[in-house]
Every structure is written in C-alpha cells, then in structure tokens.
Amino acid sequence: MTFILFGFFAVLAIAGGIAVFVVNSMARATYALAVSFVAVGAMIVMLHLDYIGVITILMMIMEMAIMAVFMVMFMGMNPALMPMDMTHDKRRSAVLAVVVFIALAVAIFVIPWPARTGSPAADLTQSLGDAIMGSKMLVMLTISPVLFATIVAGLVLANPRGRYDRYGDDLDRETSDGNADPEDPIRGGIGR
Amino acid sequence: MSDTSIAAVLLLPLGVVALAGVAASANGALDARSKGAPMRSGFAAPLWDAARLLRQQRRTIPGADSLLWRIAGAGLGIAAVLKVLVIPFGGFTFADLPVGLVWFNAMDVLLWALWWLLGWGANSTWSLVGGYRFLAQALSYEIPLMFALTAPAIGAGSLRLLDVQAAQQHLWFIVWMPVAFMVFAASVVAFSSWGPFHTALGEDIGGGVLSELSGIDRLLVLGGRYAVLVAGAAFSVPLFLGGGAGPLLPASVWVVVKTCLVLAALLGLRRLFPMVRPDRLAEIAWVIVVPVVLVQLAVVAVVVGVNGGAL
Image: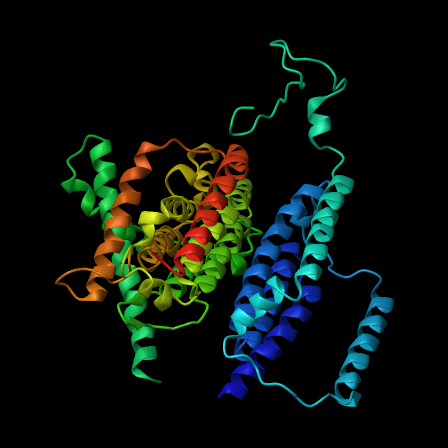
C-alpha cells in the first residue's frame, strides 16, 4: 500500500514536470509545476519527514502563486495571458535535459552509498530546529541576508519604474506643507 | 479502512457543509436586517439561492480555462475540509499530525492558488483583477498570520494540536496572546475574502472573481467561502480558546459551540469595518501589524522561558 502510494506520487511528480512543457498557457504551466512539487512534498512526508514535507508543499504553492504576480509585473504587453509555447531552444535543451537525467540516474546506481551509521532522532522536527538554531546557525545567518539581498537586487534591476519614477524629478524638492520628502502620489495605508 | 478514516470521509465534509449553511443563513438574516426587512425573511435566503443556482445553466466565456477554473471552484470547500481534518475534538482527532499547525498554514496558502485560479480561469478582465487583488492582499496578511500561528506553538512547545490544546488547561492562550488571536482572526477573514477584505469580490469590479461564475460553479464558490470561514473559526478553538475545555457538555460539543461563537463574531463584525484596499493594507500590515505581532511573540517567548512552559 505504502509502495503504491509512493509510486503514485513519484509518477505524479514526473507527469507534472512534463506537463509544464506540454501545455500552452503560463497559468497551466505554473500550476503543473506546483502539482509536481506538491507530489514531491507528499513523498517527503511519506519518508516521515513531516515538517519538511508539509513546509515544501506550503512554500511551493506560495511560490507558484507569487510567480503569477511577477508574470503580470514584468511581462510587458503580457504575453503571459495568451497561449504560448513553453519551450525555447528546443534541440539543445532536450539534449541537455536527457544528458543530465541519464547522468543523475546512473549516479544513483554507481555511487557507493554509505551505510547508515546513526539512528534518526525521536522528534525529527525538533532536531531540525536544534540544528538550524545551533550548529548550523552561522550558515543560516549567512544565507538569509544573501538570499534577501538577491531578491531585492533582482526586483530593483527588473523594475525600473519603482518609487523614484513615481516621485518624479528633483527628489530634493519640498512639499507645499514644508515636508522634506517629495510628495508621493500613491500613498500607503498609514497616510505618510 | 479504519473507523476513523470512514468517519473522516463521511462525517467531516457533512459537518463543515452544515456549519457553512448555518453561517450563510445567519448572514442572510443579518443582511435582511440591514436592509430593513424582518430578520426572519433572511434565514432561508441562502437556501433559495442554492436551489436557484442548482437549476441555473452553467455559463462559460469563450477561451475560459475551464479545467483550472473548476478545480479552483471545487477546491475552496476541499481546502476547508482539509483544514478541519487536524482539529482535535477533545481527545479525538481525525488526523493526528505531528505538524498540524504547519498543515493548517499549508492549506491556507492553497487558498492563494485557488482564488487566483478562480480569477484567471474565467477569461474575464474583472475576474482576473479580482484574482490579483487577492494575491496582493495575501502578501499583506500571510506573514502576520504565520507569526500569529507561531505564538501558540511557542506557548505549547509543539506543533501538534493536541499538545497545543493540552497546554491551555490552566489558562487559555487568548488571555496572554490577545494580539496573536486578533491577527489570526483578521487573517481568517482575509483568506475567506470576507468583510473588510473582500476586495477580490468587490462590487466596484462587478463582483471580481464571482463575476462570471454561474450555476453550480457559483454555488461551490459561495459555499466554499463560508466553509473556509468556518474552518478558520474552528481552528481558533484549539489554538487560542482552550480546545474542548468546558463544563458539563462533552469536549467535542464545546469545540462546535466555541466555533459558532467565533463565527458569530466574524459575521457580526463584518458590518462594522469599511473595505480595505490591498495596496493600503500592505503598508498597514508591514509597518504596524508585523512589528506588533513580533512583540507579542517576544512576550510569549520570554514568558515561556521564565515560566518553563505555558502559563
């Protein structure tokens, strides 16, 4: 039973991955990818890594939803809303994909995997938390700002029409009521 | 299949549907009163609406992505049932996940996808605008919601809902985590596209994601929205309201009673707040709500650290 279920999710993950390149709509491709990732998350749950599995499902659905936002933000005339081919540079990418797949598949069988030495902790979620907040703290502290800076830098580079476009020229000008910052034509919810 | 899984398959969806029906009925009555009609006339209104929608023919615009559209329409109710799956009714729970709290979070993120797909699938501008409005709003409520969910987890020192419930036997979490509770309740309203956060279904864009829905599709979405609201209200019970704790009645009944009380509050409060535009909400959420809920978390962490556990 477990074997059948695991196999089902494995096939679903691969089928979802294939569907990404077969469908002709950005939305379907996005959510085919989400299905693929959710299947992977379910497989991780079946390996008794509950926290990582559920969080994978959570993050991947969220990520695909956010991708829909970026789709509209950055695709000029919005071809994302029309039917389109999901593949580019077909021959080379097909060759690349097949080669990588074969290399990874062969590696699974060729690599002399080490035998398990320890035994899993009683509470895997807790030991994960201990590792992140303890021995791996330095890694997390380094990675988080780098990831965050990458996101912000990516946004700044991809979006030339940010707040400075909104403010207009001459950022040094004062507003009529003597405020040092220029007037923002699109004000936020707390009325600044 | 074991008895529990049979019960989960049969009883759970029926229960959620029943409670969603009660919520719709109560809302119909309140609607009737605000229009100046007698409240009695409103109770049956959702029932007549449902009957009408069941008979109505399905309408589809050419070019609609019917597959994604219908998956999304049916998905709201399913997401609600999947949320309730992990809620403990006293000592009994349909699915005792060690990470039940994260499961709830994953299911509410599923709503991001569903609301947007509802907007996308119709192939109508107003629907799509509604879908994007929901996502813009989600970017504001999700982070505060995640922090609000963290508070009971820190208090109980566990992500398992039975443990969270057990940690409140002396003092309910709502007493010393009021901010987390309020943020949670507001987020429930937001992910249900309800009350002040229903811009995705706004009248100003012709009903938004609802604009092209008809017949059974519309019924599933309107009903699913109440179901999601019910699931959110029910989840506040093990998180903040002591779970099944209460005198005389059995624990499972208390869970339902408390759920109904929270639901009544959400239905009643709906009429007190104006609609909040997602772009304004973004600044309110990130500049005010996130820091406030972080302070709440700090307080909870210090209390747990000093006290060596929940109060």
